[in-house]
Image (tube, rainbow, N blue to C red):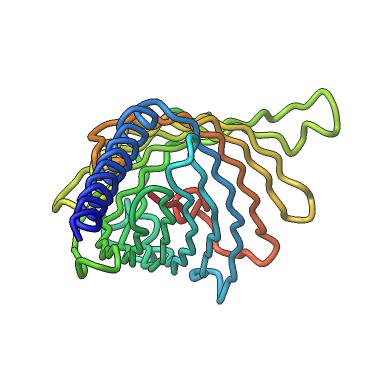
Length: 265
């Protein structure tokens, strides 16, 4: 009986030490390794026009972070409306956007996270020099998140994006006719705290190519400065390689750049 009691105490002690070591290892991985990390983003974007003033844009994407902290899967659709108002004030707004999305984060060392997102946004122009058009996009997001054990939490976030595309009118070779350079900068403002990605600065220079068939391929080198990337880490610097494929063969709506309609995180 005494032997069994000692064995039981030893077993409890070993299990306790193992749990402590596991928790410490998890916190160490999450805290230390994601402060400066590398990510790969892949997404496929397609749109369906209903008429010259309305279309539905959809993005299906995958995100991977190195070291292995999480994988993310997402699907977001946005209904886009061209503004037809003749009012002097509202005429500066070129389009309105309403959307919804599902984002699932599969964590390696923590509970998975499911997010349901609602989107409302609009795009407007600011007078600039003739050669460059600056697209301004403001978007409000309602974010409902759950880790499948603590119920749902609600958060609200405001995003502002400034973007443009650089093209050349004259080309030395035929293959450069479809070449362009998208450039974006974006600020994320937390209105009510969500579980992840509350405040963020994003810089996204890229290179793209448009085929005559209507397909586009874009590659971005993105820098993120993020707050609250994990449960135990408050800030991180993210270096991201993003590859985007766009199918615009069925797109008729004008003056609504796709990069303003589709994004995540």
